[in-house]
Image (cartoon, rainbow, N blue to C red):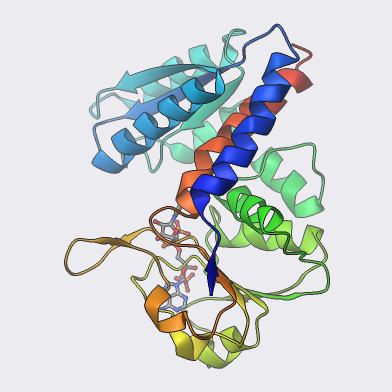
Length: 279
Ligand code: NAP
């Protein structure tokens, strides 16, 4: 089994983005909006700032106290949303429970919604219209497959997970590429048999190493989106990489896989957003 390493995909994507940036005199700017100090959010923000810097994009963080009222947050959000010097917005979610996340999804300017949270961008994705923005994680999976020259056309793709952030948008991106898609979830009967039929298996269940060799078809490509902590507090994916090594042809590791590519896709979207706005 060979590995598709996130660092290789990132290097190729970043080089492409730097070339695009060099061809323009405008430097697009990303706004990262964080409420509270959740370690996952802080770490994702740090990674995104670093990646924007590496590529040469501007990036500004807007950090609010967890105790901010819904009304005050909506007001602050609208100000950032309307700032003509901001080209893309990344809102770190989930927001604290007292903040109306659905209202923010409705308010965000679709042309700046670089992580595809607005219903407008979601509708475009489901319609197969590529003028919107797909969620970065879902698109990062496609970037990894493209990098490895794995065509989706006519392939049996099984996705384990049906969230609105990962599983469902990913299914739409795969259908757009002419794959035959099966989506699995907790009510799927005979999960292992269904997964085994897949030529490309994508795991986004959020269950530490749940997919071992008994879920993998011979010579399958296995993409692991999961980011979990195991019982020893070690970062791991949804796939047991050691167990599948004699069965799968290609797989992505965790850490160092899809998660690494996500912020480069974010940068790609920020550049696209500025370009679509005529900057
Ligand atoms: P989620 O909202 O919890 O959704 C998990 C999905 O997996 C649900 O549809 C659930 O089915 C399904 N599932 C859970 N256990 C299952 C099982 N035993 N058998 C079959 N299906 C099962 O999670 P998410 O937000 O989509 O995230 C999924 C994973 O991706 C997490 O590990 C997360 O950390 C990771 N992630 C990574 C990135 C990144 O790389 N940057 C970004 C986002 C998420 P039901 O619908 O039936 O409950």
